[in-house]
Amino acid sequence: MLQVMHKDAARQKKDKLVKNLQDTGSLLVAFSGGVDSTFLLAVAHEALGERVAAATSNSFIHPARETQDARDFARERGIHHVVFESREMDLPDFVSNSPERCYHCKKQIIQSLSEIAQELGLEHTAHGANVDDLKDYRPGARAASEAGVIAPLIDVGLGKDEIRFLSREMGLAAWDKPPMACLASRIPYGEPITIEKLKMIGDAEELLVEKGFRQFRVRHHGSVARIEVEGPEIQGITEPGLRKKLVEKFRQIGFRHISVDLEGYMSGSLNRGLENERGKE
Image (cartoon, rainbow, N blue to C red; front, side):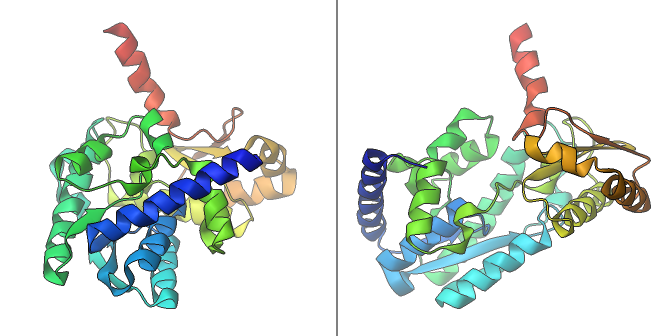
């Protein structure tokens, strides 16, 4: 929980955010339904009213529940919302799954966002990156910057903890939502991305949701599923009764071997190979 002085600082950043958003005139928000983009869209709607709209990409790489959350939020708030097919699987540079995968994916999505913004007569497009995102390898952010997509949360220096705090103050249900990345991020770089793999990952993760887990990843290593859950939940997921059910279901999904990572959930864990390669340079 943020300290009192940090709470005041977060509120001041929000005030600055409101002013900056008002200065944009009109805005299209790239809206995934996650914590950051939900907060950005809510504040932008307060600042701009009908001069803001949301756009959500829909494809095999996005969990269906996330897209539905985005639909529900926009509908409840009366925000104009466009859901479009992003078609990443048509991109050879994406399917080959190089470390630049996200760059090519984001570039195509931004093209669609630009067309939507133009059709709606909106002056700017924004995404919900925050300052904590700058600490990890994010080639998609480079694509956004090159295309002139603004990052209002970064511009005012807001980090994830502050965004969660402010979202809770605003009564946003997404304030404590676990981080979510596209399903392709579960496949190691260099391993081709296929619809079959994405479906296996999606079905496996949906099963974990049904079993009550909140923060997790199912990493796809060929015939092996490597499950990451938060440290305190490792003992629970290996409880004999649940373990047996998960093994049975995961095998039905298509995995032959099912493992639990003893380190627990680690955001961006598949980026470690990139760090090792950089160390050799």
